[in-house]
Image 1 (cartoon, helix red, strand yellow):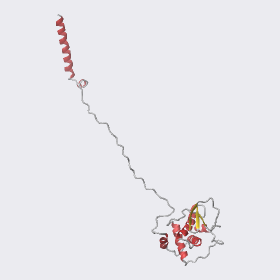
Image 2 (cartoon, one colour; image 1 turned 45 degrees about the horizontal axis):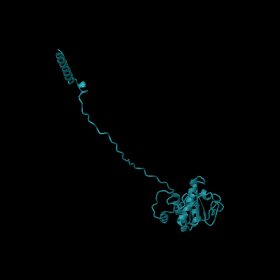
Image 3 (cartoon, one colour; image 1 turned 45 degrees about the vertical axis):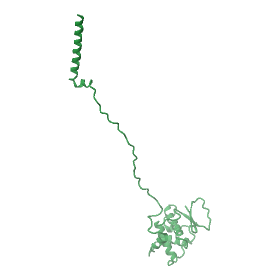
Image 4 (cartoon, one colour; image 1 turned 120 degrees about the vertical axis):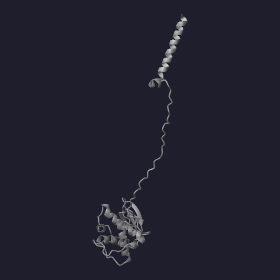
Length: 208
């Protein structure tokens, strides 16, 4: 009797297992819980750091002078200047100051004197015209009684002074005393302790 019960239990268990297996193959969602699947593995993204090169804008330069002159020397630039037939009073004052202050000195020395007068008109500390600067009281020793001595206009020195005046006004050549507002002959020793010495050009010492 016991053997019959054991055989019956074994058959019932086998039937239960078979039913479970057959039911599992028919259900897609349930079957996926039991059937292992292969998962494709993707490599992790890799980031490459590379330097980014960006062109920088060209730096702008600022100078006292205008564009580069079409001359290899100041002498050549002077020779390129044409003496105007009708000079303005202001240009006569500028050329006259160069003539009387630096006549006989090098072209660089004459230009440095001319640039001082031009610089003063733009500084906001002096008159705004060349004649105003030149005739300002107690500034230029060649001025006598609010007048300028007579100029020998046919002389090479005057022609040279006129050319230098034009170059100084245009800023067409770099001055050796860039930015100067004051000067004195080296034979005198004024007490200008608060000024900055820039250069000595020929017989004059220049300051800012």
